[in-house]
Image (tube, rainbow, N blue to C red):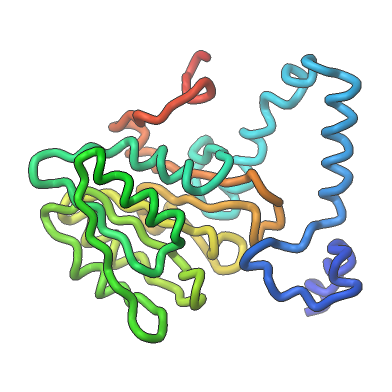
Length: 246
């Protein structure tokens, strides 16, 4: 406990309030203000040269730190502006083929994610939404039961934002892989607060953000892509930094 208490002074807001909403926006670390000031000073003094002197590598540096937190191999995490965009990149790797065109998600997923899944209908996907229970939980076996040979991808939240219910992803990943489907696991409410090991779990994609428990502020979402997915698929949603030689 004493080891944790020594970090308290690093979060200015804790000196004047009991902060209990890190599930929405994490308390700002004291060092964040210094980093923002350094960023502004670099822009003001170095101008466009800042890109070559460090800015270009910053996303990779941050991705490496996140890899250590979620148990990911080097070079497997990319940074994005929000989780919806990160999930959209993941979904752009998947195409509806024949009867294999169903996206399975849950009614307890964050609304912006469900909006994205519903939008995939225009790309030829079907959508199966697993309802939650009265206590706002979604036991893994309910998700497993919704997966069949028509399933192309399963999207689920590791921790449900409405209830803090922790979904066990292991049986979901096992069933999805058994029918040839991929899994996108949303760890926005889990990375940094409960143990996460994407390598051990065998999940195909893991999305999350630094806004909450990682105390990183807005505009810092990330996407883990498993090595076997990178080796066999190509995303349709790409940009400048998606190229090996931009």
